[in-house]
Length: 400
Ligand code: MG
Image (cartoon, rainbow, N blue to C red; front, side):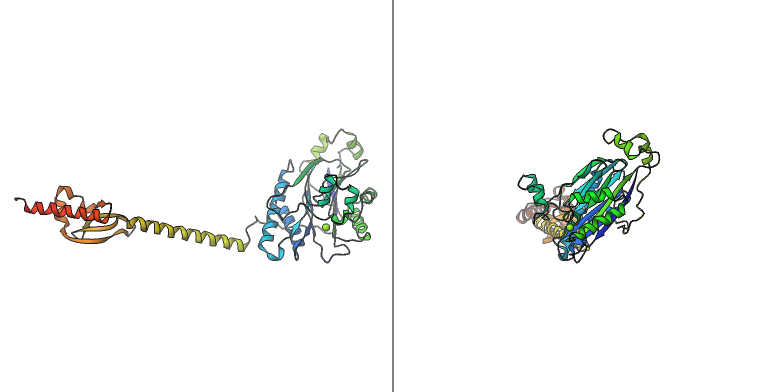
């Protein structure tokens, strides 16, 4: 199965700027509708898709990786909005699909939409709007028809860039040859009703032409908002069953030949694409410069504070340590401990005496004077000195 697509984004007839963005990269397709702040809308939608497109499309298997990428995009938009006062309050919707063999994984936040048009089954909306009016419809306080034209229909209850952790809706569907998948921003759905969208999609076979006609319809209805549409056509390749055969198979299964044809085959682009939003490889996101400096500054302050606290603590400790030792051949009272750290002594002489250290060391009881005798206090140290003095006096008084 191959995918042919059309895409078109239009400013509409009422807006000064186009704040919608779209992304087409390998098997990944996404639309985003930005809002808020001075120039914030375009930045939010483009940044979200840059982050999304920055990850190479791995073998998906599920919608999980896509959801993770959208959460990462959310973080980036939020960080950017917090770092730049001009962008504060910006946000964006994001509706993305990644094709994965005979499956398509859809992930979604906001009020852009994904629809599936399956031959004979009409147009099916795959996503649910994260809007206040949809919430009221779900609670039975508003009918779907009332919601369509409600003045507050664009108030979002969920968007990227608003809070750190957002739930992302996800679904995986089996796709058949002949299926059409439409991604669009609310600039289409708020201007063109579902029946008209179905009519255009059913009557225009070329996906790019279909996109042009959808935009035209939105503009003819007033073009109140920016309009972005991506249309994916799933097409049988040679050797694959034709759409009618595929449709006759039971529930979404694909044949072995179709699976084989999918191996190593990604997306073939539509020939008539007018504008493709391709992106260079985006490097791993780094904290904004301002934030990095702030982090570095915080670390420095933290380390300096720790060192100061340590040295104060050591000073207080040493001030309360005493010992009696040898100072240039004399018995002396030291404040501190009889050690060195590198070249730094951790003590100083508090009081020198006239007693000879070498004579004292000759007495067995004071032979360890060179290493110092620790005392509990200065008075205690004075007591040790008194005992040495007494012992020395006794020694010199003793008969030779
Ligand atoms: Mg919009």
